Length: 82
Image (cartoon, rainbow, N blue to C red; front, side, top):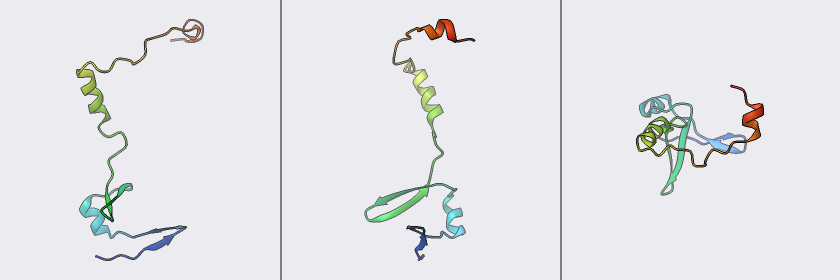
């Protein structure tokens, strides 16, 4: 299928037919990359996708401890209220 480039400000864009969008499951945001001289458009994963599972796996391996030791300050004694 051929498509024409259209001007969008100083950039250029293409209009994707709804049929193609539906076939590959594209949403409002996509990933673009260049592979061997081609522009590849693919469905984008939601931000922070997989972070919850990664955090659970770290906890299971006991790798979720703070990196720095706790250092108390005057803020803890005088300013912080629970």
